[in-house]
Amino acid sequence: MEQLETPRYGPVSGAAPDSLVVLVHGFGADGHDLIDLGAMWAEALPGAVFAAPHAPEPAEGIPFGRQWFALWDRGAAQLEAGVASAADALGAFVAAEVARLSLPPGRVALMGFSQGAMTVLEAGLRGAVPDAACILAYSGGMIGAERPVLARPPVLIVHGEDDEVVPAAASRAAEAALAEAGVPVRAIFRPGLGHGLDEVGLAAGAEVLRGVLSAA
View 1 (cartoon, rainbow, N blue to C red):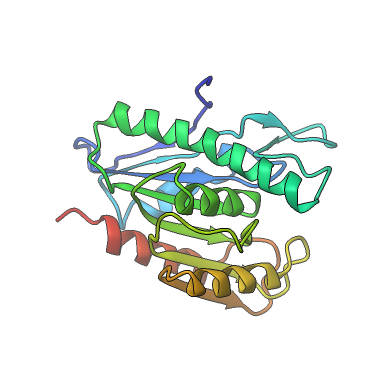
View 2: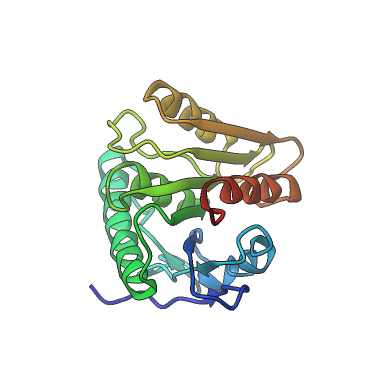
């Protein structure tokens, strides 16, 4: 598979990288939409490389941006096939980055926003990205939540209560499914927040990243 184009940031320590944080954008965006989080979260993880790959496909129906999987058919079978393919593409990217950076197992964190959140949950829980240290899922949900999980990294879910694109109910359902499956999950639902990120959710993400990836 062709390697995904990727904006990168760090490590700000100037030393050899000790971890990788993969930032996965939503529908109609690209990696530039999230790479600035690297500068924000580098204080928590000065040894990390932050990478924000562009999704493999042009976004359907709009003249800009990328998509991880198509949304023209939102039937369960189509969405499950789409997110599985997206997870495989992300997994190939992560494997190449881990090899390039010479990282040991367990030093990769996955973060996604919207469609990207759906993609990282699929990738980190169902085998495409093995040994993920954690998953941060913002303003997304879980496609095929009833399907079994293969891994149980800690998951942080953050969602705006006033999200007009992906209802907060999608993340509530994901939280319930993950808890039922024995996945350590924490969920934050932000009053007044629409389809976006805020300081509270980003600070919570930094806390999780620091907890699982801080150098010993």
